[in-house]
Amino acid sequence: MPAEILIIEDNPMNMELARDLLESRGYRVREAVTALEGIESIHASLPDLVLMDIQLPGMDGLSATRLLRQDENLKDLIIIALTAHAMKGDEQKVMEAGCNGYMSKPIDTRLFHATIARFLKEKETRSQSGNGI
Ligand code: MN
Image (cartoon, rainbow, N blue to C red; front, side):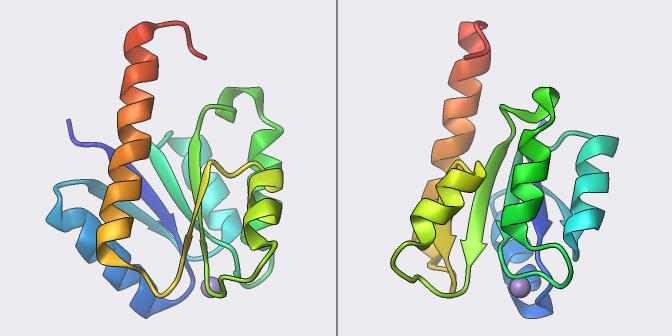
């Protein structure tokens, strides 16, 4: 079964690009356009990885990540932030909020695929070792 990736992104063009890139590699894709919709989707069914836009209407991506990390069952969920402006200090904020990684927009196709593949491989290795760490 291919990995399932939830994209939380309010910009339709970014959503379409991310979806197309992921589907081109055979991943299953789910979409949410607000943080609340994304959180609801995660609770309904756990994806393998979440791409979390930081700038969202209403609750932003960092707040959503902090909220998700309060749930003990979601501490291993892979959350990769998507942020529009690669500003100094952004990465630290993103990691402090509980994201596992960070990609800046506009999306760099090669980096995008490499990052997704790396995190999914780490997840697979973790689950095979069976210690849940
Ligand atoms: Mn946005």
